[in-house]
Length: 111
Image 1 (cartoon, rainbow, N blue to C red):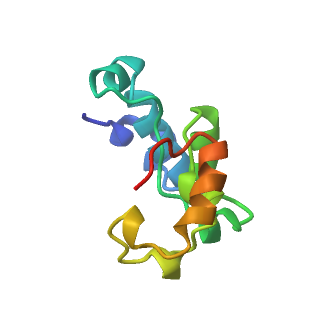
Image 2 (cartoon, helix red, strand yellow):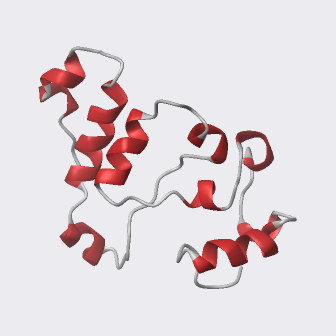
């Protein structure tokens, strides 16, 4: 998939909302057809619980507009605990968090 951030004047202006324009371009390019061809139900991205605490999150605003999921925020995963983590089965507190995520529709199967 090719994105065209460089053709967006708001992105090139390099303002404080540059991340919004970058994510907006990316999420716009991810079409329903692309999801269907990969047998995906939704798009998710890597905003974590620490990121979500920030008062101004332009990329998160783009995710909201495009209905992109934030499973790490729902699981309350912050940067240090999951850094280097390589799979659901190796995360000690996953069971409780997995149940929480499942209620939000992020995880549908056991590790």
